[in-house]
Image 1 (cartoon, rainbow, N blue to C red):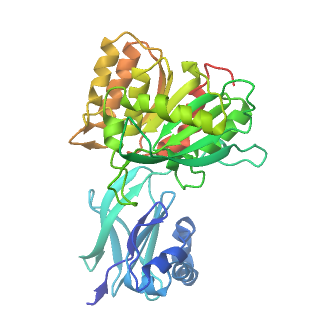
Image 2 (tube, rainbow, N blue to C red; image 1 turned 90 degrees about the vertical axis):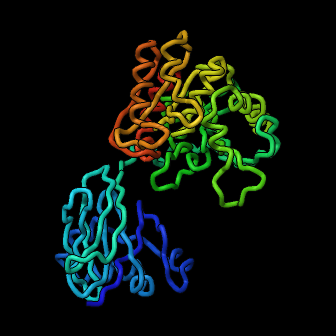
Image 3 (cartoon, rainbow, N blue to C red; image 1 turned 30 degrees about the vertical axis):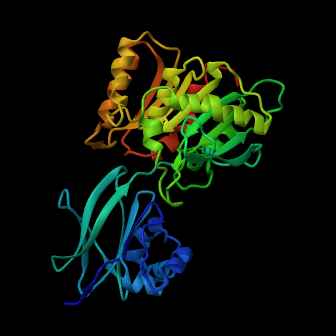
Length: 407
């Protein structure tokens, strides 16, 4: 029996790989088929379903590749074999479904429960002909994370910082958001985001859309007029342009005051000067935010200088033992309460590895904050490590974080 492998793994509407004679060109032209509509269309109108899938992939990549597409929590598998193909979930042995013959290839679309992560195989005549890994995590944005035509938009300007004395030999990009409502008559509030550029982008499919959230919440009077500083971790001088920032763990996971001094002595003065803005020096009007190691960094900054940063917003916090942040639950219990207001979030399916358990570490952090009578709130979901759940919850988290001051 002659078989070919089913089509290349794609997650959250993003192509992981397209192998064809002109891969780059194929990737530019590719558009995801509507998996939700295809779940019903494949068995009811196979010809129309086949037309949609062919138009999406193109004949070259369709004929020679394998793939899986997600739309919300609906997965779409496409494959080729001389006999029916089954999709089998490996952790449970469950057959998720059998593909329908669409003439030259087969396809299956199926809606699954949210927050699923498992390996699967594609089998024909009981033999494996392909497989992959499926991760489903989806949340709808609230209106406050989407652009509203009647809401004035702040200005967003990108910069590069190459002259750090505290982290010498590094360079980094940062974005400054100045709200439309800032008129210079009084100092603005400040909110700093680690891993900043991706969080400032209003167009990512599952990103924070933080500048849009700022636009909407400031316009509604739910938070003060707030300048946003979205800053990336440092890149080392010998790094290739497309490599991940090599100084991230050193800056974010380390204890001590180096990173907060970097903000206070280098970045914040530059922002005020370059943009002719006056930022409040009231710690209740200064927040610092981040996810994962960026969350640990945010907490460390406020812990070291609560006189400068009185608010922390963080998600999937790395309060585990990468560079010592696992001590925070104990420190919070043993140290006199500091004037920090914290909005934190995690998921029960967060990562567990050699550095520790993120869900357990965050449960310990929550218990310590409660024990020491901190002004805090924790949001818990079923999500994985990342920003997907935080993106959906950001307006609610920010609204609560700033609710102790007037907008």
